[in-house]
Image 1 (cartoon, rainbow, N blue to C red):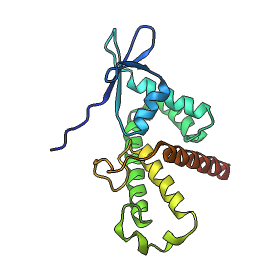
Image 2 (cartoon, one colour):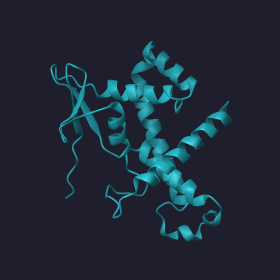
Image 3 (cartoon, rainbow, N blue to C red):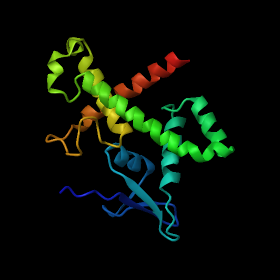
Image 4 (tube, helix red, strand yellow):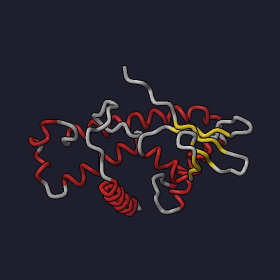
Length: 188
């Protein structure tokens, strides 16, 4: 049986420095974001009080990316989130968001399958000969990995036999970022 990987334990010291208990070194928020993008769950605990600070730090990571112009959340969604904290309906928002992301992941998985993602019939896909199709497919897979915490569509949790090269991932991230900028301009 496959062993479930425990979340990476990060301890926050009184100095507010973050300590990776697996590698015995200090990490930054960007390091933590990288762990998550690589499919690893993290848990951030205050060393002195034992409080779980994971949610606080994940929100901080999102806020930093948003402030750098890497907008994922439209203003109307952010506004609705703020409103949900001040209304009685706030208690149903977390369940709604979780269900929405589940549906989003499912639809993205279906789209990848139809577009030839992990499907051996991909060569029969009429779009597979289209210029840029492979780049679009790679962007979609990177997006799915980021959105699902590494469990990309069609994968059953097994690691790929061949590790991806870091420069390939950087290129995919850049393409995805460029695509997000183009999409945000289209929405305006």
